Length: 276
Length: 285
Image (cartoon, rainbow over all chains, first blue to last red; front, side):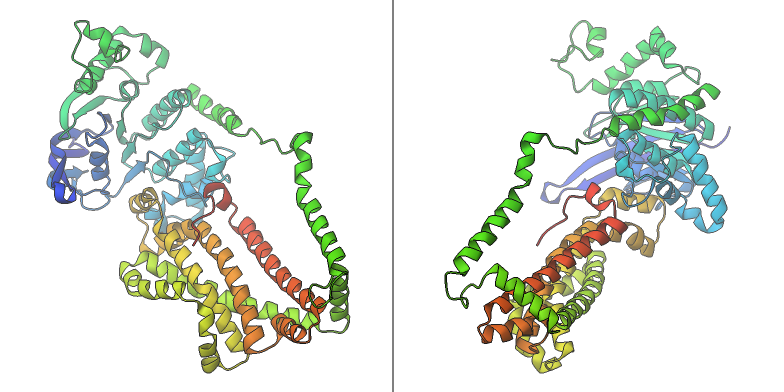
């Protein structure tokens, strides 16, 4: 048995809010992520899912427990990670190619100019950005910008890919298309992936396992296996009754404390239509 | 997998097509006449000036035609071009120094909280002080020559640049700082690749304000310190009540300002084409 790539054990986090005291953002979260696995973290706003992801990237410190990535205790930004931000967070003054090259900053000194260009060109090809190398970010649509964000995260060939609601700001169709591409690209890189989302369909479609979180305080609620083969074809996938069942299960978990008191017909409610 | 790769390759063109819808550049005819209004307006005012000016004492208002004649005369007698040259030199040396010092100080304050807290009182003091009152002190320090004119131009212009640069550096979105952390940029790279470029729109807004102030500083210095250049021309012709010549000098000074603004915009468009597309106008002070 290979050691897990990410080990989260009893991790907690408080935010101080002045005179109002502390707010418990995360309480006693524990789980492992295996090598090559695609994990989604899902939960309502305020469940600490983004905080947890930022901890993996060393962007937010944790107060208690232990967090290891590839066997190393996380202190500061770990080596060999890629991060895709919710807003693509591109540098508006740099071309697509230069934005992607920024992802190589940490390993820049080990690469020749030619290698650097080659790596960037390969990512441009992989993420479907050919012909846009010299465009500035503002010239691209939201979906294209997020491709750049993904390419920047992948260009250093990270072992661990962290994504914070990368498709959250996109329209439904662009989003579905990018989900499929994302699945294909990530599968090709073989990176261990942690994907934060608030979209149940997205989580089910992409993940090997789904970590469902609860809020006040942010904590782990349940880990749901998604035992369907990859690559997944969306049409067949959506039509599969077992998928629908799993999706309802996750939706029920996520929305349990958000919904009005449960009606007798729980399955109907879980579809999210009878909220009003 | 091959099928997926093919679909990846075909998608960008569709997606960018949604965005590429060009804005209608040609306005419909019924609003086009409104665009001529500025020209019509200027023509009418200049016409009125000509009519009124030719019916009253020429010392009071002069006329556009007399002003143009004075302009021509000052060029042919060799007064205007050197004065224009002196004004340009005073302005751009003083303003240029203000740009260098202002941006450097603004970045320092933006990146270091210590520097910010130490320098903040002085920035506020000088920003609030009517700096023209310091001109006599400038004369005491620098005499009445080129250095004094540069110093006057500089002290009027530098504060807006410092403040706007500072605000621009401070307003770096936290997401971009996160990007810098994740990709392990060092302190120098954070400044050169993230915070300074982020401040550029703010800096340009500051430069535009500072240019106006530098122009005032330059003219005040030429009128009160050295009596040279365009300011000197205006003062001398004013003292001898030759209003047409005075106005020709004033309009030449306006031209210096207009040229400055055009140059700033050209620099912005050529070197920072993303500025207007991403950030509106920056912060004005």
